[in-house]
Amino acid sequence: MSATATPSGEEEPSKEQRLKSFLAEKAADGEMYFKSKFIADEVGLSPKEIGALMVKLKDSASEIEVEKWSYTSATTWRVEPA
Image (cartoon, rainbow, N blue to C red; front, side, top):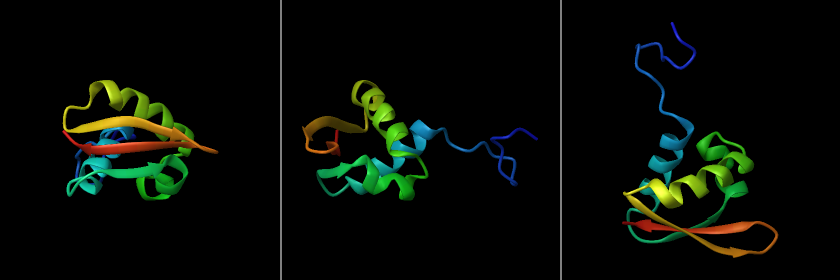
């Protein structure tokens, strides 16, 4: 059994997929603003991992629109449905 397989035999989603799904669900009713450090526990990623993935999602995600909103002690991201 691989390290990414669940007991039911299904593959776990990648970190990027987990973050994208989380953001799409949270932004389903409209835009949301967040700092990586405040959602890290919910997503199971470090703030640094989230920051790196947000840059990738900004260019690749078609379900959501990602915008680097502001920087005050940490980057604030704006996410809305595409």
